[in-house]
Image (tube, helix red, strand yellow):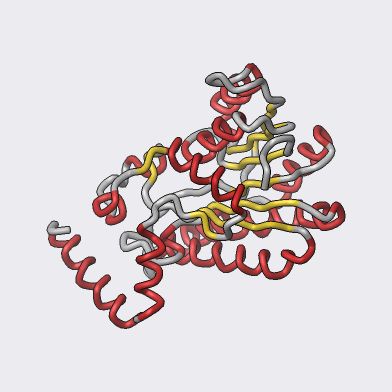
Length: 270
């Protein structure tokens, strides 16, 4: 997946990972960038789009627009795709990146579970519905879905987060299998803790304690490299693949180790 001369859409672009990707992608001379986030981020989106259009941090000027979009609503995701295609004629790469943290367990109310489901799973479904048919018709296109290392291993503080991120990876797998022979590439981004506004309030999480917070800029560089290699799993934290292997090789042992680790965290020893 070459970013140069590509038309790229990024959701969750006003801050954090999405913002870092937009700025890094701009250095690759794409044909156009379309940024999206919730309506309350309009000022941040407008500022970022203006910066990229003018040439950010030594990058060449890139045509860049933005649109408010709640990715949990299919009509808004479809409107975003239609606007991008109207402006640029096509979408080469759709980055379904928006995410939230609303922690919960089995006792958490249905509305919190549903919100996680809409943003972390259905947003990817809505994006695929909106852009895959056009990509298939052209014989090429790429989807980058942001999930989390929590979708490969787990998230000790949050069932709502871990469960929906597992589902996000499963859906990306399906897309890669179903549409790979039709010219559609799929990558799923699975970072651990990244230094973004979304996670700064959770810097005491288990992932941050063990492996630290990664700068968003470093993550964006990993994304560029992962897309160039067309890797299905983009793992900015190299430790994650070893954690995943341990889990797969002996599930019961892994569960026991995670229970012990969770106990240490609860006691303040982690």
